[in-house]
Length: 279
Ligand code: KIV
Image (cartoon, rainbow, N blue to C red; front, side):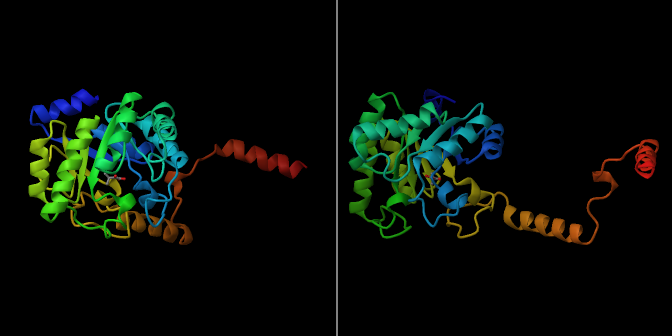
């Protein structure tokens, strides 16, 4: 998938799909399923690395995971999610960090969180040849400023700010914009106003595409499940059961059986025994 391929989908009224991937198997599986955009989301800080929030993850950790995903992906557009304090710290440093996702991580674009206030940064990155996916609404890196993990744009004033932000990001050169946790009517309005695609996560059905955090939708994150998540699989109890059965079977002498063991020719085995006796 290329950026024009993604944008053509909006023009043709075909829905865009986005899932997060964090390693080689998730990258491969999501790619094989034909998902359009594969995001190395900084959600990996919580879902894979066990941090309390997305804030502590570093550029190096993100690039390490991007490289693994890249090894499994042939089709989807890979997007690297810029971690907190790696893109609002001066032009040079921002371009250098985003460049790491492209040069080292094998990504085709980067994502940054924030609205109007990020327009200048988007322009800088696009000018440097780095495509940018915007992200407005609930922006987890600054969730405390927003009053926690809450739906955004519920009143006219904050809704207008989101509309202005979406337009500013489009003007600055974003190729698409993620709308996270905004009322569906507002997402519809923004989607109609923008030429670039909107990709919703908790933003209703009217967006040009949909996104989910993979470990939420496969039931592999134990701490909480947001209302907008549909669980397409429930892997946590399935895996726990597999690990418990393994432990029980080893302890009870039921594993391994002959099926999982290697045999040796008896005549060869006798030779060892004879040799040992001769010594
Ligand atoms: O980090 C992430 O997984 C994200 C999604 C919520 C889009 O930014």
